[in-house]
Image (cartoon, rainbow, N blue to C red; front, top):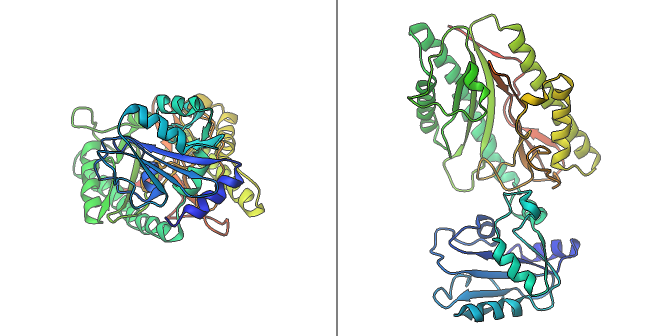
Length: 392
């Protein structure tokens, strides 16, 4: 296991006695990724893998699946009954007073809150303190390497071409008739396949009041026609169709016609400037080598929107971690839904996407920020500065 030394060093830095990985029925994707295990293999019994701050790791598997952790180093023990499971787990943790698990106090960071309450209770019954592995996960699972980031950059190139084609398609179809949101979404799905991109969910195409719903999903039964004078939100996310690829996730705003309404442009400008304030804070802290938590970036972005009297219309966090899933397991840009006190460190990739959702229309502007090994902030693709005028 290549990461073993680095993990143990991180445990000592954090003054932890170890890190307990545990899974049942492939529920903890984080453990599989960090340990390099095959998530597609059957897991019908509980397994445990304890990495101490010093010394050899310890494996504990059920007799039905005794080879589950054979690719990992360390002493192996096999349990059969629940009594032996408890006893051998206690022995595996012998000498440990304070350990990390995929746990979050009060479930403040649900992305890492994967160890069930009963298992945490069991470990605590051995006299062991359990703390969150959130910062360790940030370092060892949510880290995006330079090589992986290049897949994100290539995805950005393809997706901006797709976005341009989508705006053009809207204009062409408005001239010919009245395309629906759902029709344009289906056009985008065809474009995804043409660009060899894969995705978790279909993109969002929302006009006017539908854009006031941050996660509007156009369907045949709820879609409306797109016509001249409409305000259009397009949110698209995808990654290259190959293993290890990293998602690219953006949102752009358009207007069908030449004369963008003043209020629409004004609200977009407020969101855009909030976005840029957030980016500026990240750039400043990274360049000075000073610590920066996700909640602080959210606070700066949110404060700008609050200053314009629109706080009640900014109803979600400023951004989320990005990795092999569009919503990754690293630090989120959040002081609203959670207070994410994890630090933004080299190898961190996250979105910045302030939104303002008025009853009659919504706006959102989304970019993806990457902090490289030199602490330089890099943003793949263009940053929208004004609303796209869709010729029709």
